[in-house]
Every structure is written in C-alpha cells, then in structure tokens.
Length: 399
Image (cartoon, rainbow, N blue to C red; front, side):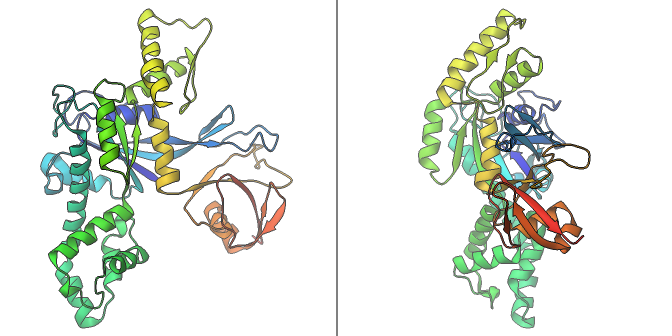
C-alpha cells in the first residue's frame, strides 16, 4: 500500500513526512527543497489484540507500544506542485508521475495562509488556503484528462467500428493509476454516457469522466497544517464549510516532529496520536525545550486533541481506503516458527474474504484453502467470510 503526500511548496509536506517516518529529509522554507521523491515507512495505529488474548506480541514489522500496534505503510513525498503542474511547470509532470501508484493522497495545506500559490512567504492570513485545495484537485483532474485524451480518438473508433469495449480500453490506459474495468463501467453509468458510441462523448463529458475517475482512484484527505498559528483557526473553519465532502484534519507537523524526536531522545513519554505526553523524571530538558513542549500542549493538543499527523494517516487508510487490519494466528498457537507471538498485522482491502487473506499470506495457502477459524470465537468460517477490522484468523490449508 502506498500513500502519497502532496501540496504546494513550503506547505509543510517534508516536515509532515519526517514526522510520520522520522526519515532524514531536507526541510526548508523555500520552493522545491524536495526534488526527488522521498520514500519511507509511515505507520497506522491499530489497537493490538495481544491483551485480549493474554499474550505479549513481538511484531516482525512495525512496533507495539502499550497495546497500540503500529503497522507500516509505504509513504511517498514528492516535490511541491504549482499551478500549471499538469503542463510541466515546476517539473510538474515528473512529480505527478511519481504519484501514479499511490492508493490515497494526503494533501498538506498551509492553513495559516502564510505562503502564496507558489509557496513563497507572505503575511500570515493574506492567502486563502481554500484556493490551494481547488488548485491541487484541478491539477490532478487536468492530468487525468490529458492521459484520457491522448489516445481517445483511437479508443473511440475501435469501440464503435470494431466493437471493442471502451471500459476495457480506458481501464488499461489507467491501470497504472489503480483503475479497473468495474470502476470505469460504474463511472460511465453514473454519468449516463453511451459506452457503445464514445465518439459522441463531448469535451464536457470527457472532463466530467476524468474528474470522477480521479476521485475514485486518488482519494484525498486534507491535512490543514500549521494549525498552531493564530490565523489558522478561521481558515480551517472556512475550508470545512466550503468542502463539506472532504475529510479535513487540523494538524501541526512541526509539533508532531518535536514530540517524536523528544520521545526518541528519552525526554518524554509519547505515543503517536495521543492527546498528551509525560515529561520523564530526570529528563534533561533545556528551558527552550520545556517552553516549546508547553506551547505544543496548550496550542495543539488541548485545542485539537492531537497533532493530527497520526490521525491523517489512519483516516487515509481506514476511512478513505476502508482497509481492515487482520492478525494471522492459530487457535492453539499464536507464535510463528521463530517464536514471535502475533508477528504480523496485515492491512487488507475493503470487502476482503478469508480466502483473499489466505492468498495474501501465501499462494499455497490460498490454493489449498480448506477453511478458516476465527481465533477469538474458535468458530469455523468459510472462504467467503468477510474480514472485519482486528480479526484474528487461522487458515487451514492442504498445502
């Protein structure tokens, strides 16, 4: 699974990325600090099942803190996008292409309004962050439209003259962007377009189709960053009123980064996504560090409940993509051959079944599938059993 992080330059994308991954990336307040995309592992937070099963887990990947399992997802930070990116401005085409495989996008917006459309500093509150939301989605829609129109005449003629299915041709063209035939067919039907004669589709039809396809394959959550600044509150409220169908999460990437680094240095106890932290006894905090932590507590955690960074990641995976976290396990044995207890937590797509889970674990398990067992209830479930979040499942297979 790949989550992409997008936005204009200097919106706080690289800080958000570093806070999520603790990767060493360059951070600066000028456009195009990031040129080549940064990749790293971010982590979604899941309530672990170990306490329910009266064991202590040993994750093979990720980690577990106080009953909170952190499951890795691939995270990608591309360079900031500027108006005209779909035409190549600011190396926009290259950066957009970097996002092809992303399953969902986190759009980091400077909610304080202290950077203009190109990411250059302006007086706080003088720029409208809602314009950044519209710009980003417009650029993505125009990118999709350009991909659609490039071979369109050929598609349309083949469909009409040779009786090819237009949904197959479009799905193939957009396969690198997570499209498939079912998604394409659904959009064609929803827009009332004629699949038998796409030669009659108008320019407006193509534009509408591109918008709907982008929405279906590149869902977006908005990280309203710099929420700790005075001008942010009113702007966030405006965005929430204007974009009612969007997930908008107030966040402070700088605060999250500061908390995670302080925890790494053993100065505080902090679990990503928590609403508070505890200063450790004997921790050697400088007056400047203590003042910074007090600011974060008063202006971020108490106002918003958390820094918003972990919340964005979780919402992208579990609310936008509707994934479920499933633990492989055995009724009589929860450890693997190396003695690791509950070593894995697997993120599965929406509507996944027990047999899908078996194939995800190993092809042989899927091909030899006999049944699955719900480890909590010890009840047998069939191949079509719909997986639920935090299920613990044992696969019984002939292989």
